[in-house]
Image 1 (cartoon, rainbow, N blue to C red):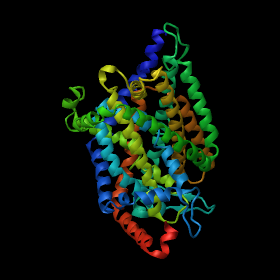
Image 2: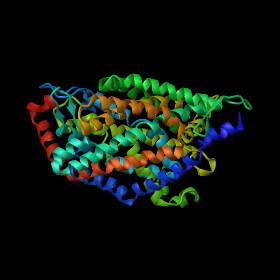
Image 3: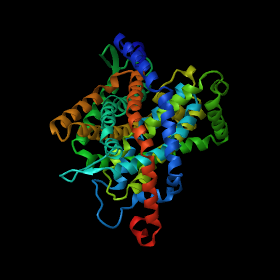
Image 4: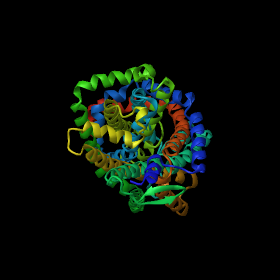
Length: 502
């Protein structure tokens, strides 16, 4: 392999302006993801969980039931089924965050970051329940029968018109998060990195890999081809709007999620004797990173910061994105959709936990290995499948396929979120919405050519800015969430409503 190309491809070698941008993004990220936002995320989850008295957790069985059953009775308002809305939301969560995001959190914050991810995600289930409930409660239907909903509507209608600037702030940051962070760049970068790793590893030793110089760096043909294919596929699906996105997500998300979980479980059970050690390492590292990791990681705050930031990235609990999809569900009951929406976080928690334990068992997170992003997960799978012939090939192929499908559906889901944000800001101006859609596709096309630090730094910055106004609204609307929950559960307990609401 050509040495120059290998070094450039492995590190995402950048020119001077990219290095400057990376430093600037890192500085801004440090301010955005400081102690105030971390506390706000945790406080919002604790406040909502306390207000609803953990009722959402006591009704997990009912949530599973609602997830796959159509609501009976009077025809419900909405564009897609509850399951379609959930899969659209899951398409934006079960993706790069569950594979690359977990690896990045552990790589930068140590195994303890996984503990803080799980803590934030646990309370995030309450946050997601509140988001789904409020999305349906305060949604609107325009003159054409189209359902409009999301944080901007429950901020403006729930808190009152004087809070509209907060709703506008959310919509603006939501568009930027989709366009420059979680929706495009991180997803396409995750896909092309996995493709690059797969094809480069298969190259014959000493054989030069073809590449093209762009933006001061040399990129393998595999990266460029993968980026082009995903961009074209994205454009083809997005033209069809929400229903096509929901259709693709309903098929792809459940299949890939189950397949990925089975593979993780297979590796974990293959190292059964080490599971207790891995759990102990995760917990100890959360409170004493230096002692648990031999000095490799030394800051509890970094572990918390990485864990909570990646938890929001992976589950999107508190981010405000999922309620945009939840508002389109065909249902009359806000609390019912809140329970369904909460299941998205539940499933994402399981996938992130399985990925994290697999990485900790393999110890591929250690800084001395020099791995980052998807490569940490790929190496963990390679070690976990070492009993198979060509385990490295199998691991690279599996991660490449998983990331390809997961990240692709995430790209689709976030375009829908971004367009609803834009529609809230400018109204039904089809020309502007179409222009944004083409800009979104363009960013997908150039995403593979940015460095890892810039990619994840931008995602964290815009996620944090987007989450803040939404979390403030959720805390203030917590009493509404509880009152609506009480009313719904009372209906369910009345015998004449049981069939209708169950």
